[in-house]
Image 1: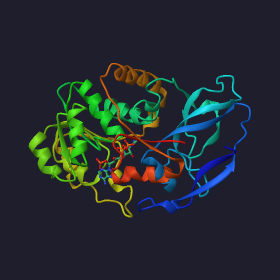
Image 2: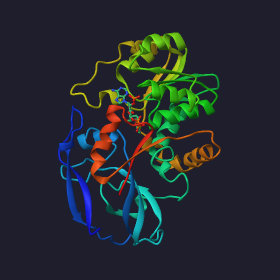
Image 3: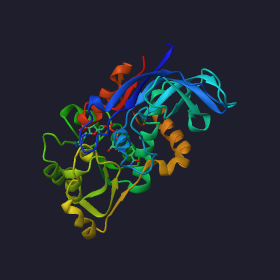
Image 4: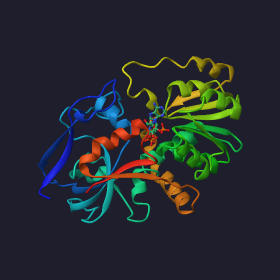
Length: 333
Ligand code: NAP
């Protein structure tokens, strides 16, 4: 291959769903690394709902994007040429290499990976996704043995890890996800005690039935009506963890505030948001712990691996349609 295939940002999808015309295919020259840099070739791309927000420039925890930029995204890549003493050709690394075949990356911004059976997990349960589950639950949720932990987006990459870590912490777990297959998977494979299919059940009725007034930790990935229902059923001193709000990411207007918020007062509860990068300095220890749990079979992970460079934009859209089952990835060809 003599050119560097890329996907560029063409439009900002603010207040609406992503569409194919938000991205533009481009062919560029392969970049030349300078001192301290690596030339890497991308092998697997990881997909995160936050990528849509990065295109919209709605968050302040990352530098702004510009129309015409290579689309920002994480990937696992192979070092082709190294101009850093820390890496050599053939090493595998992860980083924000963008939607392209080749990137020149500063060696200080990449993570060196072990090429074992958990390689692709570095984009999921051992990557930022797993760290989000780990720190959001343990630092903000503070689960205690016997607690009831309810998770929305429970069959997604983050939610599936949250439920399993809560089980390790000795909690009762209830997952909320879309569709019977995902709900069955939560119970059969992930050890959730109960599951609620928000697409066919009344979340409010089911929460009332399963854990009315006894939710100690609610880990929220979706916001909107599901967050509001969960707030109605929290226990005294509950911890509500605001991780994500995917139900609002495609809306043109802000959703109404949760009308049950005052239950936080009655129940002396807390509701707190976080951004995972705040815990970056603790990632190595958390990764080692998660890797041990994976190795010991205490947690499992599921990956949804699409293929084909041309399919990259459509693969990001799968997250917003609930088409992904597990961590969304794409193998570069
Ligand atoms: P994911 O859960 O693997 O994929 C997104 C899932 O969201 C879909 O599979 C779908 O599952 C669900 N969904 C989509 N539209 C929905 C809607 N309108 N209502 C309810 N559910 C909907 O993605 P992820 O990467 O693990 O991210 C999960 C959440 O964590 C996102 O909100 C993301 O922004 C957030 N996050 C936050 C941080 C942080 O630092 N705070 C870091 C990473 C991720 P169903 O089939 O069940 O509908």
